[in-house]
Length: 298
Image (cartoon, rainbow, N blue to C red; front, side, top):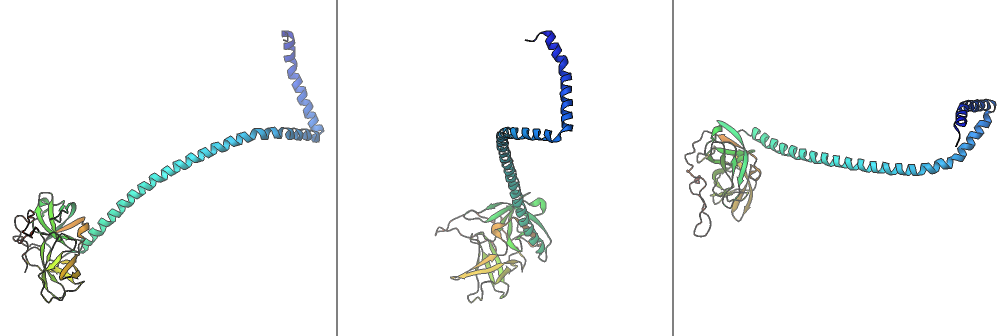
């Protein structure tokens, strides 16, 4: 080990020595620039393989890191797109539902029968599709002015009539119900009949004349008999005639009712019995008998 005096002398000489070397390099650089450039170039050539060998693993590690970063970025982007797609699908369903409701309500607004004293639109909140019943429950009742016997219209045609009324809800007997009997008339030939529901989507025409000229496509309207419906309300069109059975496709889309318009025509409902929907009962043949008290045929 160096002694203290030697170490102190070396420290004192280090700074002047460095200054002298720097000055010498400056002088050499000014004196012979080409020599300095050749030395620098030689050093670069000598150190290039070392720098390249060091750079390769560094570049490889950086590439792997970038791939992982890209992978996580793509994953996060996919997650975001999935969530956004799910939200868009929800909004699409809402928009389609609103569009359907708007179309149905728009049809109701365009269809305004004559002789209307007042009306209110109700939303269907429950349906009954059992073996013997075809009716719907709507969210309007006595508080909104609904009364038993009032007509229920769906879209541009008759859907049924009010049979039960509560303070906040009412029940509508549909044209397709087994208990439904509506006096009707063929619009072109003026032949009278009774539209009878049989729990299918297309009710039948009963009591047509023996030599009736009814044809598929004939329009059917209410006859105005029975004190429930005024004459001339659209009911539907004849859809089939098979084996003497004439069936009618209702104008209202009864199977997809979401709204109904309860209309007050100012007609008396005294023809309605206290219970328009009787309890099911079986005849001797085992079939349920239709209620004879509802809209007796003309």
